[in-house]
Structures are given as C-alpha cells and as structure tokens.
Length: 374
Image 1 (cartoon, rainbow, N blue to C red):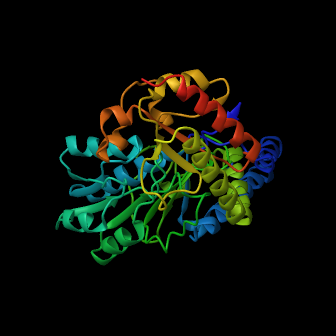
Image 2 (cartoon, rainbow, N blue to C red):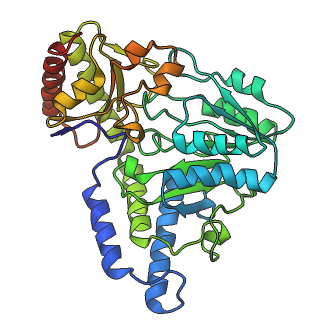
Image 3 (tube, helix red, strand yellow):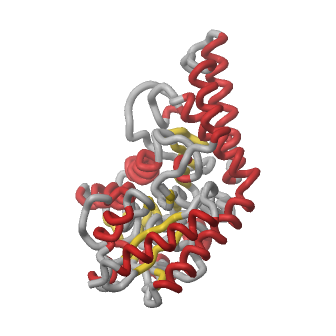
C-alpha cells in the first residue's frame, strides 16, 4: 500500500509513539492530584504545552488542550458566541464541517452569519471579507489552508483587518501547522486550531491557542481543568505525544516541506505525462507543499479509487465525506462543473513517502484511469 492520504491522517512518528508509550507507563497519574505521581503527569502536560506554544510562536499560557480539531473549532466559534451573546460572524464557503456546522447552528439561534465566496483558484479575497464586516461583527473564522485543495488563504491580511477593527479572528490551522510555518503573531490570529494527527502525531488530542486577553466561554461543563475553559481529566499520553510532535516539527519542518514538495511535483508531472488532460484544482503555487487535487476528465473518481484502493490510499475529497458519491462542495464553490468535480481526486504526500513509491503510484493511477475513461 502506497499511502497518499496524509491530509486525512498521518503515520505516527516513531519518536512520538515512544513518547506516548512512555507516558502511558510512567505518567498515569491524574494531573490534578497533588501527590508525586500526579505531579509527574502535570509536569509532562506542562512540558508539552510549552512545546506546542513554541511551535506556533505563542506563550504556554495561551495553549488549551482539547480532544482534537473539531472540539477546538467548536470552542473557538461557540465559545466566542456565548461570550458575546449576539452578533455577526464571517466565515467562508469552503470551511471544514467543524467550522461550517457551528456557524449554521449560530445562524439558527439568532446570530447573523456571512459566508464569503472563493474564486476559481479556491482563494478568498481579503477585500470580500472587509466588505462583509458589519458594526455587529464579533468573529471572523477563515481556515489557513484548505483540507481538500491545499490552497492557502490570505489569513495575514484578514487577521490584520480584524485586529484593526477589534474583531476576533480565528483560523483553523489543522492542515497547515506541521507543513508550513504558522506563527500566531504573523498570522494575526487571536485564536488558532492545531491538530497533531495531521503532522505525525496521535489522534484524539488537539489544542486551541487563545491570545492573552481574549475571553471565551466553555462549551463543556465540569471541573476547572485548562483554566476553566475545557473540563475533563487531561489525555496525558495524547498531550505528551502532541508535544513531541511539535518538537519534531520545529526540528524538521523545512526538510520535510522540501521533501514532500519534490514528491508532489513528481506525482503531478508523472500523471500528466500519461494522462495529458489532467489539471490541478486550485491555485498552482499558493498551496500546501504536500497537496495535489487533480481533475482527470472522463474518469469517475469513486470508481477510480475503488480500483486502486488495495494499492494506493487516496480520497475524492475530505476524508470526513468519504463514502458519499456527491461532488465536493469545495470544488463546486470554485465554479467547477459537477462532472469535473466528480472526476477529481486528492493525493497528499508525507515525510515517509519515497520517490520509488511515487513512481509506482503514477503507474497505478494512470493505468486505472486509462481503463475507466467514459
């Protein structure tokens, strides 16, 4: 199996797995307990908090651990709404469901929500966000990089717009942290979502970076963990693994980005040489180095993926929508025809892929596509 679905989830780095295993064995105490074993667990959590903070240019006290990206996004959006009580929210038409659905929930419960469109390359225009701002706007939530196309959004410009108008800005950086530099201050992000299983860490854990002075209301109710913002006994092994993941990212980000970019370019060049009418969906250059979303006209993507599923792991869009034979909402929002959207697949490379694997994947995909042309 050649694994080209790294935007859905990544293999756990061996050093991260070792850190998780060590925490399971040694840091089994409750971090809220005052005895030595509890204090050991608490120290492990705080060490990880510092690593996550350093990875994104935040302070440790600004990092709040959650169960993953979905909870982090919900906490950012609903936590802001609960704090403000009413108002207007701006988001985009290409957000992940964990952003889109909380916004729809708010819309059904008295909040005003604007959904900014994208152009044919999958990019949001900062000026469109500016035009959508109202006196009542309390939050702008725009993803850093799209999970399906890998297209990068102008979050620095949007964050600056928000900061100048004293509007909170949240960016879902689930796909970008660990793949490209993501510094909260450079991005002008008041709130930022981090998901380690997208960059060689464990599942079931995530974090939200919340800038000092920003007030959110909790959306879960229990004891006073995470400064009262996120109740529940901490997932110590997962948090330790996330910390180690962020440490490895700081050490190897540039090397990994160069490697996956080379492989991604090889993949597209090879497929295009064999299937000349293949084209990239989204911006040609302003995208994640590991992400390739391509349209193969005349080929049903679901049938193609079924044909290669025992040899190459890939998807027709977001893994969150797998099993649904419907066109990608992201691609349709970019103005693609339904036929072209249904003929598109997402390939995402990772640090563990090799050039030999890419060459083999090209042959497998091309052969399968040639046999399934309509």
